[in-house]
Image 1 (tube, helix red, strand yellow):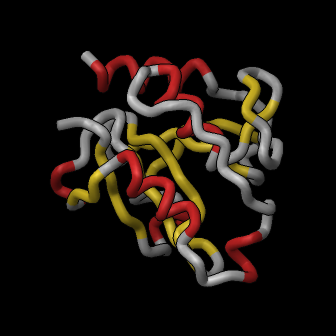
Image 2 (cartoon, one colour):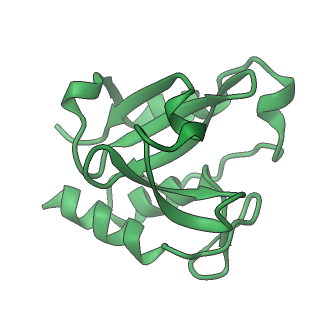
Length: 140
């Protein structure tokens, strides 16, 4: 099942250190490159190489990350999310922090404060629960 493949690949990245704009398993990754690498490895998207600066969300209103997501996934409601789906939160001026859903409300994401790829709870972690969020699926 494709959902299982996404979750398994995401879990392989757990404890990979946070590093802006990196995408190397076990070495470094950020919250944009992490889902791109996982969904590519699972065969759901082609290789994409987003071009962004580490703090673009603090200085621009342009929904750059959201635009990349919408090219490959469709938006769904919270009640429809399942393992392998994607969540994106508004940080700064636009939606700019992504995570892969494990089993709602559990997610896995690359975070600076957590030191890298770690699990989180979108209902309990204040950094996530306090922000606007959108959900997407790459599955039919």
